[in-house]
Image (cartoon, rainbow, N blue to C red; front, side, top):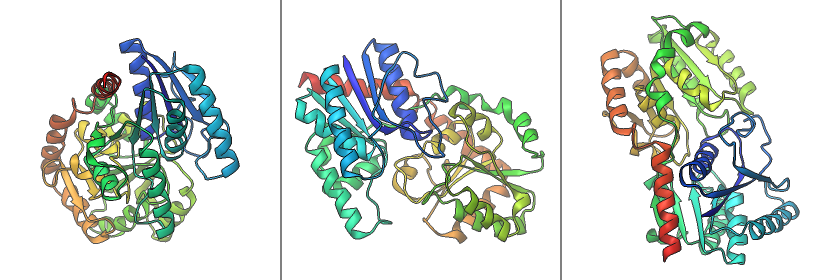
Length: 386
């Protein structure tokens, strides 16, 4: 096949890792011709294409005008450049990701009559934390774009339900395909535990609560810091490890300092995805307090590593964080319940081991990127045959 993938930017993030694995697998495992069309990776999150060699052999087309923010002039330029690139590549399949590239890319591919057009919902662009007008605008745009593709992939069942509830498209237009990853480094990550903890200044007696996410709005770092105030008063042997970087770094530093929690927190800064398993190995618990997320990769990554997860009960989290089975679910924004959950796992090492082991057993094979690509490619074939 000839397959064009379109995504707004290739920053260090879950949707981007998913897309890159898919592109590489299609070319290496199936011999497909793949074109990756993207905009510049601006901002503190880092450039995935500049931090990994996994994209070797993938043809990449950069559209400078393709940016995340809405700008009618730039967006129209991006649309026509997309249309030109798609026309020249003449693909059998156009597969779009993210809101901006998803809307413009589907419109361009539909206009050209591409045989199969697929979009992946990594996280709905509309949510309850937006203004009413903004939310309705994004819902209308997604509804319009859904009529210009043949199928939509959701990374979690919860994403399908959110889109259906917003009348974006009927349920039969969706399929759930979990976002794949290289699971083997997480299965063997324990071998790095002692060295990484030593490098971070963490001793054997410390219980480490980790969080892996961009330091960005609605990711919930502030909530974890607030819960830490109570947790450290009862368990002074805890340490909190934030993996990632972003525009809220200074704000979070100030919050930690104001609460007198500086000795208990460590920031890694921007981390290459290949290094994430090592930092998870340093953790005893993963705390994921994001307010909106399709299905955060950090959750299955931790569980595959044998680390139990605490998560706000939002979107697709409950599909992997099975309450009292692989981790603990907490109502979003409930700092007391979040603190209770952290304390419960801090106090019981054997319980942590039971939850983590069950997470590894259930999800190690389910989240392999080869499984994801096989399911996506089977969908391509089905659409082309129909």
